[in-house]
Amino acid sequence: MAIVTISIDAAKPIALLKNGGKRMAFAVVNALNNTAKEIQRGERARVQSQFTLRKRDFVLREAAVIRAAAGGSGFASVSQRRFEARISVGQKPRLLLSGFEAGDLRRPVKGKNVAVPITGGPARPSFGSSVPKPFTFAGLSLRRVTPRGQQKRKRRTQITLAAHISSRGTVQWKGAHRTFLLTQTRKAPKGGVFQRVGPGRDDIRTVYSFKPPSRLDRRLRFIQTGQEIAARFYAAELKRQVDAAFVYALTGVRL
Image (cartoon, helix red, strand yellow):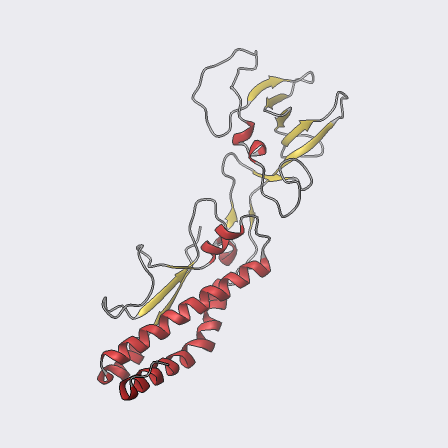
């Protein structure tokens, strides 16, 4: 997963304003931090416009994090002599946001293929809904048995299903809620997870379809969005902060 970061360097403005004293340093730091917040708002708006957010609050928090590369605050600080702000995409496990910047390969969590829940099925009732807990792979867990039906006592894992030999001689992995996994079918060459919904031979529906790893499209545009906002916002904000510092020094009035 790629790490995407935007840095705003204020070394030149500091050099020009160093004779202005501490108030000028604060003016630059305030301009940097306000620009970082503006970029954060813009990045979050971009994410909302481009993605269906099934866990909205979590994704928006991770869309643009003001944090240093080594952890801690990414804000500029006069006391710490840090005259830059850092904004990056969150790097939480299984979060794909940064992959949409560089077009990373989406890899499966387990196995060779990616399990895609079928919209309208029990694992994804609607396109915008999250997978209900009972139909996550963890929610389908059962005891693991041998093909002969002998139970084995094993520590529970994230995906634990029961092996079964069907009447056609195909290995099935049986799960909760009358689900079973097949590694290959005529309609699903890579296999999938299916659910029996009636007594008939064909009374089944697809819960997950297995797909090979594929490239994520580059729709995030994190760097481009941040650069555009910084170019539009930072100079004007720096001027406003410098003007406010001079007004306060001369009159004691805060703008």
